[in-house]
Amino acid sequence: MMVLPHLPRYSRLAWLMGLYGENYQRISHLLRPADLKPGLYLSQISNGLDLLVEVLEVHAYTLELRLSYRMLDPVTGETEPSAYVRIYLDARQAEVTHCYVGRRWQDLLGLHPTAKVIFGHRLRMNSFLNKWLDYLAGQGHGPGSLKRLESSDSQEPSVACA
Image (cartoon, rainbow, N blue to C red):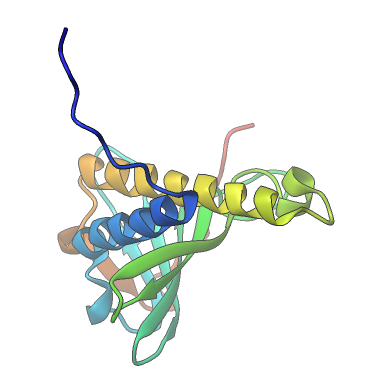
């Protein structure tokens, strides 16, 4: 009979904090956020979807941005999927503050969700970001494909197929 070593159990909070740290590592390799200024950026690759990066706010220790594909939801007219990300440069953490993947949070959680429901939703959103960042890097998106858009360069996003 083989005896397995005792593996540590992590609390849900420790798991979420670890996810924030991993998201920071992935987004740092993908975008080099410390180098970004407020504005709109586009990453284009030859065989994939265009990635829009909108840097919303830059502060001394935080950066807020929105990641989305260059496609519009035909029903809402918003880019989809999209994730709003707050990056803590000093703590090396990145968290999704909210995201839009076809539905609003009220539709998913209800109008008065419990703390447990909200926490579970934060875990799902940040797991989504983690997988999406990994996918984007695997497709070839990165600092070399990211170009700042001037207002005359921005094109209307294409409407997603229904």
